Image (cartoon, rainbow over all chains, first blue to last red):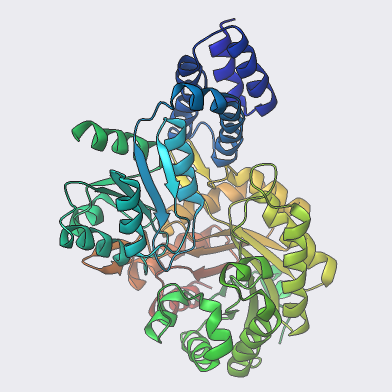
Length: 212
Length: 294
């Protein structure tokens, strides 16, 4: 069988040992690392994302696949550094100030990394100032914010307002998500995009980069 | 007070209380503060909320201990206060309800993801539950209410910890999402596996809370009925919240929920109560309907 397909299938199964072994084998077979990443690891993660979206699999399966992806990435990393890391763009992620819930946010991070984005995860309870400071320092194009508590949702508006105040609204785009968050809410606070779930968030982030 | 399980077995339907979070915010809980912080600073508010639900006719009042396992409290650096947080919550509720209502010792998720999916050892989670539940039992809760669970392993660890400690009845409820393939928790647990797993762990009652409005809860109760003969516990949200400006609105009115509660009654659900978005007014209406039909 095609080794890249084999990597993708084992990633789907969450078999991190096999993914690691096969990735090494692929490198020995002189397959370009970019190809291994795109068709093996990201290819597998795309299928996982699609299956998760359609409820064929659940969070535990995604977490196992993510672990397998990281195992593959660890093998590829030294080669990226040598050849220059392929990078689809930089995204700042965090749970908004006052909120400590991070399962959803972490999942979005996994999916974004799986899709080849560079993710800077600020963790939980992140202040609007910290989001913007980091975006400036890292020259990131996207800030992704998550909230689970209805009481912390209004804090997201502050980030959008602060960006406008600093005249950064064209340089930095915002995307929000989380259980109580909706498309209407995103529009009402002036966020640029909304992610219904982790796979939808990846699509929305892609769209924002394409419009850039 | 008559034994709670005996009343249920004799066919009585009991009414549990509704949401506390919204009321806590109304009484000054700040954004980002854990609700359990009031157990240290504002037990007067806990008493007030218990009183409101008692007056609205609830048979069961919940102690404010949902996030009071030491693992969960560690997210707020409050784990050293686990004992006081749990004791104060039960004492505040008991002070108000005396023997006029039962007290639920609430036990929610630790917020950790267990190995192999996450980084937390099951033993650590078990110890954390054991530690919390020992205090709740010592304070004399009438029921241990393992609730809002999405991971069946975590739920059964809590149930097993409770059963290892005492003979206090244990209820466990899980939170399901409505997917095109049916009801599953976000960790992928179906109603059928929840019923099997929780029964296996030795619960005295089981069901669902949070995550759904009452119409979905009726479907979840129907599904449970196919897989268990244990008493059912259903505590529904007042629908799925909508945003009105910066305000969060739960769409289901007391009248709507109590009308739909009739279907829960006809499914022989033993305990009907509320979760997010429900108010003393919702519980009052549910009480009225339960009394009129039984």
